[in-house]
Amino acid sequence: TPPLDCVLAVSQGALNAEMLRYLDEQQFQEVSMCFMTNLDSEKLHTVSLEHVKSTTGVNPFEVQNDAQSPDKDFDPLLKTPVGTDAKGRDLYFEGAIKYIGGLPSTPELPPIVVLPEQMDGRIKYNMTFA
Image (cartoon, rainbow, N blue to C red; front, top):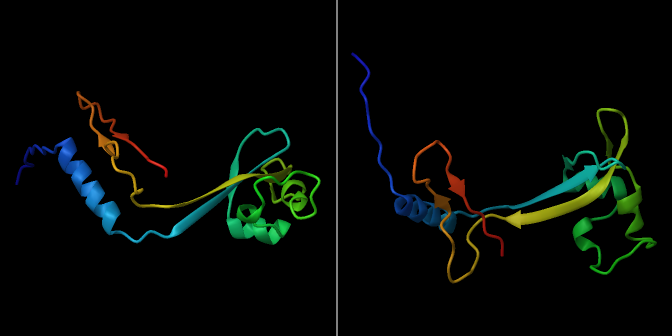
């Protein structure tokens, strides 16, 4: 049989309603990402939180907000290499983020999906952090 030509029509409102329903119904796990870089800050590399904790002995999410070097609890996080790059240079902790997917508890959200006026294959996705 010959292939059939099909047209699929969808509205931005329908996509957003479905995304809101999906995000509201899911039970997302907490995700953490740690970043490391060499002393020249040429490129960020990712590493697990467990690796940072086992290498430095410090959980970056438990460091006091006002911690400054020198600090016996904080310094190992900054001064202990947590890996090496492709050139064999030591990589050091740079930062970390932790998040849980879902819907923030805000009264109004911008559209999650924004369709362009002319379909050029690019769809805009908005992320909201709370």
